[in-house]
Length: 536
Image 1: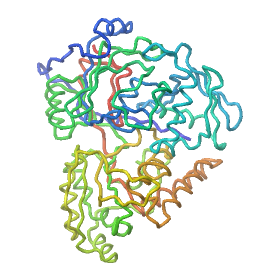
Image 2: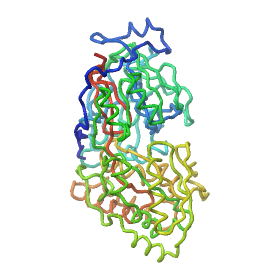
Image 3: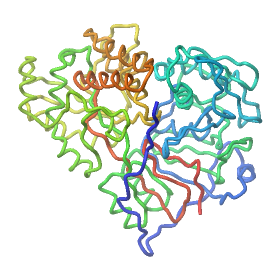
Image 4: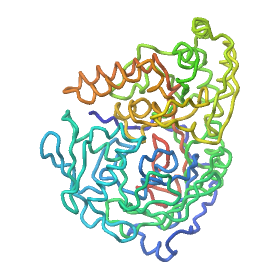
């Protein structure tokens, strides 16, 4: 299972304007510890101060089980450890809460020892029983179940050793095991719940939670974990993430120095920020804007109608005008930089006449529908998409909604969701870059998406089941060539069926005050990461 490195694309800009450097706000933040306690927890070599960031997404669910939000996932990663950590910058997977790489007992059995002396922020020891409980909880969670399905079971051999049984033997199973265990954040078994959590879980990571409000206009606060004994201790007195969904608010916080770093910078504000002395960098990513259809609802259960949407959109214009050229059109679900890339049998380009012909063939000329749009950066694309769809005779009504996703339908019901078509962003690379992760997330069995949102698994044409047969065959393949063949079939199926499919791969644009922070890198995925950062 080859791991692809996530590398930078290059600088849009990076020079500080003379005399224009705004003063940074470095005042202390409130939290669960006192200022003196936070200060005493600072590590040798720490410069102190408060690392302040401007974040572009909001969320109030702190549950680490099945975590996937663009705000909470990176926040949880700062406070809760996994057995192994995946670097978004190098693609390397290294031991974290684990003492070393898995020890192979036989073809389907591995043992993993915990790091000696690992403790939670409350002073209690991390146990193998906690690890097992978290693995099992995530295996049972709809969001992660398919990505962890190759793990048959986990058990505590003793207080500090976990035994993992695989469901089947396959090539490079140890590497895949480490990468997937990155998804499982460890916290006390007593805190595990299937419900949304309004308060954060206790972790063993370098940071611990302070006061938290994940609503837009709120903030997440962090202080160093005094009990952390791992390789990457916190390197500041405090950290605060400002939740600023509005582009203007986020850019202003960065420009004025209220934030030392900010994510998801609109291309239209790059010159404004670089002129103020902010370094802004453009990085290749797996980030997408996608259309998702309610495949249980006529006429969106007809692939010809779905395909018409993708032929109707002027991608060059969309990327040039709305994204400032900071995206690439698709030739497959994965970008060409991924080792598993395969040019799909169906590649969409701007062809309004073909779109009209498909609608006519399906008997859907003049179709009226509602396009549901998430209220974040993706909404800036909705007006042009609406115009392109109307140009082929569709009656498209926009509905911008602050709620993140359509309410999910339980997998054991035939209820049909009320939405028609959904426009949203996504980036699966926060879970890794292996092809199986990306294919499993939106299309696999027992996931939120194919079962409960696009409902492709329940639309009745059998294509989702066919897709998953090939996905399982790829997982169990004895060699790389066979695995790639199966993946290629998967890419072809989703490109033809498009129950949910990307419009482009979007670059990530990040801004930061290079003169004020070191060890910070712009992430090639959603979120901001400060595990190696400290203030100068």
